[in-house]
Amino acid sequence: MKENSLDRRKFCTILGAGSAALAVKPLTLFASEPFQVQEKPSTNIGDATKIPRNSLSMPGKFPGKVVHIKNSKAVVNDKPVEQEAYMMIEKAMLELTGQKSLKKAWRSFVNPGEIIGLKVNPSAGKLLTTSHAVVKSVVRQLTESGIDKKNIIIWDRRGIELIDTGFNSENYRGIKIMGTEQQDEKGSYFNKDGKLYSEGNIDKEWFYWADVDGVYDSKTMQYMVNGGKYSYFSKIVTKEVDKIINIPILKNVGGSITNAMKNLAFGSVSNTGRLHAKLLNDTCAEVCAFPPLRDKVVLNICDGLRGCFNGGPGANPQFICNYNSILASSDPVAMDRIAYDIIAEKRIAEGLQKSASPDSLTFLAMSSNLGLGVSDKEKIDLKVFDLS
Image (cartoon, rainbow, N blue to C red):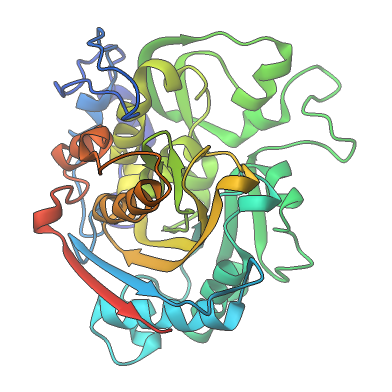
């Protein structure tokens, strides 16, 4: 980071394990679960918010503005169509920025010479990964705007999931593919000394501390990288990239959603298993408030061509549907709020719930309180276009 950059050792001095978290009412993320008040574990979010913001910080250039592009031709025989995706993203970028030139629209967010990280989501496997139609369209528009392929990184938490879902050198020539969790050519996560290869990919000078212990066995440790009360940020976000374009999928989790905020938070730090039970809402909001994400995520493009409305965030074929949508925003909080309405509408139509339940979006209210974006729907500037 070039603006308001902070020496990482100074950051370690600022951070104090055990700082009180923000006092946010602890609602459950899942609308279908009964409300239960539980003691909220402390985190170090209070220290993170002391670090000065910069001109790039969330919610970015267009706070509260979301563009929703619809296109019934975007998916044919359950396969996303790249050319349709390209046109949808083009329209979204022009409407979001107000520019008449696609190149100028992209240059509102990125510039030649910067290392651009594309955060995809392959965690549900081939059935429901961030589509190549969308990612290839983003890559194509970036390169047409003057960004060299060698300066583009496609990344996620687990390298093996990227490979399994087609994010490889064959499909993306000249582009680096990176995962925080790595294996060797034989598929092992451990070197000859029994140490995890992935340990070298986490940055122990940037961390999310939470008073919840992560205790894993030998089989699960390789997916968590470390145990204890620290979740370390991936070096991909702290050292490799200058800016991040977040490309999540339109998926449900219970009666709520997993989209922009969760794709960033749980995809960028280690030792996450411990955070799901007691700090799922907090993690989605608070991890994104740390400078490696807060100050680098400049754009969010939601792949809503295909998504799911039940059984998420995994891939259950009977619940996968064609939303035929693209959402774009510099504000991940506002985008998640609009994404929720799309999923809620589908769940209501399928008889899974009777009405929308925005109370399930606790993490968005928390994110708004942290200054990361607009969660109040009445304050969101939504532009909808149908290219069908």
